[in-house]
Image (tube, rainbow, N blue to C red; front, side, top):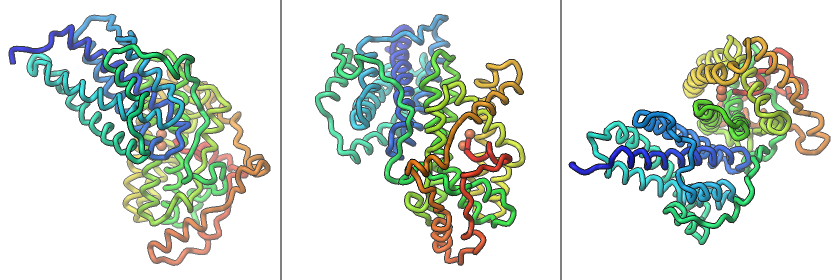
Length: 435
Ligand SMILES: [Fe+2]
Ligand SMILES: [Fe+2]
């Protein structure tokens, strides 16, 4: 117990963890949009968030131990910088996950464990507490990562071996990172999203139709939740393409991004419970993230997000969805909508802190968002003409499958629902996407 690390050595090691986590946060984030595999898209969202959270804790702890300037933006070691640049620039998913899950995360976890055993448990108790919690997340990430490598059949190769050496401090030669990588904002999806331009089922018109039964509406809300997969795809682009903000900005935006991924998975879980094979019976599109990422700059995208989300808080929007879910008797839907609404309260705060604060008055900020949103072109007719989607009305199949699973007879009016996004009702316009 007499031996332990001095403050200098603790800070040196913690800065190395901090730098690594910051780089991991961005590498995960920057791949969310273009990664087609659904589980990886969701996994990257979570892991980006977990890395940001631990980085935040470390910033705070380093700040407790040292006077400013803390040097948190300084690269602690050139070998490490090259290592992360190489992984960030990996040409495909295989290389990327091999670097992240095969090399860096297990090595980082081992080093954090080493720190916890090296440092004095009494003298450095605050850091140990922080890292013990962090290790739970690192453990989750490495377990998940090992499964990813196994499923994709990936094993260590020459490249990963050289990454391992770079982690150990050896300066390796740049292979992929001679040029900086440009962010790829075009969303990609795997085969479970076979009709990604389909705008054939207008969820909002159905949801706000008083003649439609609440039970069927819960199904439509699961669709709305799952469709939110396009929010992380869009938010990742804002985070990737906005430079020079305080750390708190990236942290908060990443938290929201992860929430939106959770919302998408709530939809998935809802369909699973309802007995609907969503990959065949629900056409989840990416038209919103595609349009925003390719037509607007990051500030304009944030403006649209803010504009849409501030429209979700009044009595249409989130409260209404929760009430419908409760009325339906579907307790899972009610639970999900309850949390969806609660998350939205946080997102409104994030919007106020990081979007609204850029304007002199809030009216101006909302108008700017409205303006940007009106410029976004999601051209129903053109998608059809170009042959990218027939906008097939998939709703009756989905609804019938849910009824069959429950042993119920489908209702005629619900089966007959056939309103697409060809024309979007003005009063439902900002509800026609999910935040
Ligand atoms: Fe959401
Ligand atoms: Fe949201």
